[in-house]
Amino acid sequence: MPIRLLARIPLVVAGTAFSLIFLSLAAAAQTQQDGTFTSNEGAFSAFFPGIPKQKSETINTTTNGPTVLHTFMIEENEGRSFYLVGYSDYETTLNAEASLTGVISGQLESMKGKLTADKKTAVNGHPGRSVTLETEEAVFYSSVYIAGKRLYQVMYGLE
Image 1 (cartoon, rainbow, N blue to C red):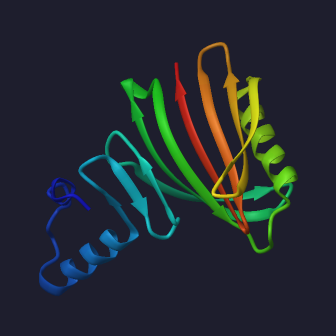
Image 2 (tube, rainbow, N blue to C red):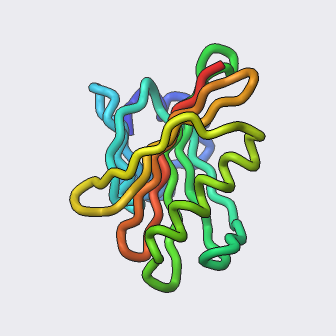
Image 3 (cartoon, helix red, strand yellow):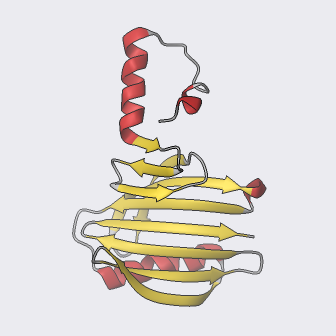
């Protein structure tokens, strides 16, 4: 975790308590000076143009049941563009085709957009799909990958 971020954290706790909080935050996620963000829990690294905000929320999927979606996102240009990486863990190994289709269909539905490009892809042997989604106001580039019981999403959007 960069020192500049720590300067923004109010130092209302002292000594050992602060050290434990700092160590747990540093272990959970780190951003290097070159912009590479690493999530140890998420088992991924990604380039971000800054320090992403983390959010976790429980979601119910029609294909794979309930899960917690962990997202890491940066918004820029007053919210007109964003970078996002997310992951979800499931109780069983995922059916790649059904899961990829389900996520992309959900993205299309929530954005009320249309699919303008769709390509099957893979990363380190893990199946995925990269798509372009367009609305009247914005374009979204999304890639979704399945790695066993984990689903990864990478998305960039701009107005």
